[in-house]
Length: 235
Ligand SMILES: Cc1cc2nc3c(=O)[nH]c(=O)nc-3n(C[C@H](O)[C@H](O)[C@H](O)COP(=O)(O)O)c2cc1C
Image (cartoon, rainbow, N blue to C red; front, side, top):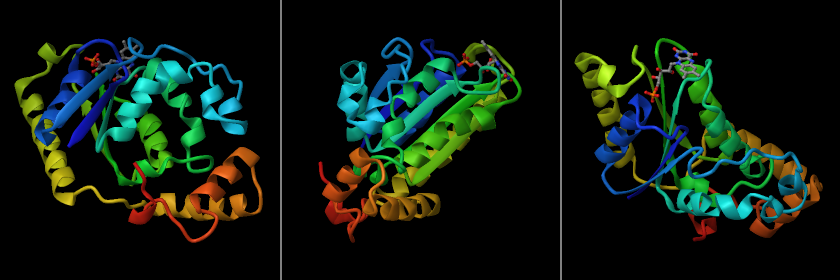
């Protein structure tokens, strides 16, 4: 099993440690990235990824190693501490670069066979909204199953987290890892994903954004093919 961890922070605090616990419980080959250390660009708003081709993004090459690691992974683990009730700015800037991959544009079919875990920690509150910042992207990329761990650690470092709290976090991580391992990796789609996909199937059939419509036609999605059906998942 290939696991990619995208940390929305450079440091190894509570959030990092929880992400790492999940990945280690899953067992497999773990690759981790830290933001902004490994990707520090902001979307410049040129919109060329949407209207023409993502390769025209000025940051495409810089982002490519992470994109390739995400594409190859079976499980994606995203982590963020809560910063003023949301994910970190570095994580948001990173996710903005994949707007073109949303279901309403050009989703990558490999996303439909992945599972994901979103980890967010706060001193007290904001885990839900911070987790949703990331979960929205994962769902709209087409990832069918997104688990979340939101922990109010009441601390500003992992060493400061009470042992009983650590134990509870660890057992939640364990339960999620077991579910992921037992469910196997098979292409599926969530109900939300299916609804959006069907709407975009019609929009692209009738000519929507030309770059998107061309992509959908090439994939056969404006006809009967669907990315969550095994025969249309290509390496
Ligand atoms: C800029 C900033 C904003 C924060 N905003 C919140 C917040 O809105 N709610 C909260 O409960 N904790 C907030 N915190 C505290 C952290 O979310 C919390 O300590 C978190 O567990 C730190 O994770 P880490 O150990 O991985 O850095 C904030 C911390 C920072 C540095």
